[in-house]
Length: 110
Image (cartoon, rainbow, N blue to C red):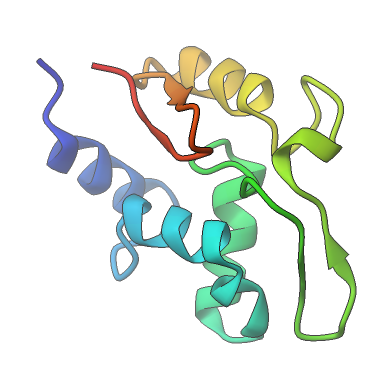
């Protein structure tokens, strides 16, 4: 069984996200609150999408500058923010893959 804290610790060493656990970041992406920040938190969310730690949310939102942040389903499979993109990068690192549920939530596969 994968230790969820081990991934958080590894992520903290990799990109400085030690103050922002992955489930916290994904929650802020999913509910849109994360897009309202231009702070270090906003930067951590962008980094988490770029490196496949997190994926776009189930619905589109508007960011701090009123730009549309697409929903996961609005990007092509394999594009940044998609499950396929995140899982490709996660597989390359040896991290557990993400799975999407029918309600739009995403979690680490067990």
